[in-house]
Image 1 (cartoon, one colour):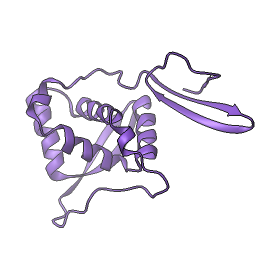
Image 2 (cartoon, rainbow, N blue to C red; image 1 turned 180 degrees about the vertical axis):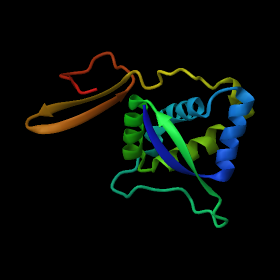
Image 3 (cartoon, rainbow, N blue to C red; image 1 turned 180 degrees about the horizontal axis):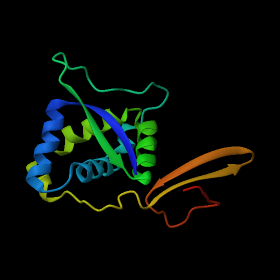
Length: 150
C-alpha cells in the first residue's frame, strides 16, 4: 500500500466523514470508489499542452491535510488520471467528492470492491523506433504487441 497526503477543503473533508459514517463504508473505500467513477468521465476532462490545475482558492482558508492509503494499482491509476486530466490528486479527489457525494442515493451505490484497478495495464510498444506508452483502465479484447509492465 502507498501512503500519501492530500490537501482538502474542510467542508469536503467533513462531507466525506459524514458519508462514511452514514454508509458504514471506510473513507478509503469511498475515495477509491470516487476515483474509479472519474474514469468514466476522464475522456471529457482531457487537457493537453497546459500545466496541472489545482483546487480553487478558499478565501477563508479552510484547508486540512488528509492522509490516504492507495493500493499500488490505484496509485498508478491516479498518476495516469493526473496526467490525462492535468489535475492534482487533491483536486481530483475534491472534484469527485463535490460531484458524486451530493446525492444521498449514492450512499447505497458505493461499491467497496477492492479491485477497482485490478484490470489496469501499463505497457509499451515500439513502432518504427517510436516508443509508445499505453495504459488500459479495463481489459480490451485484444492488446496488439503488448509488453506487460505491471
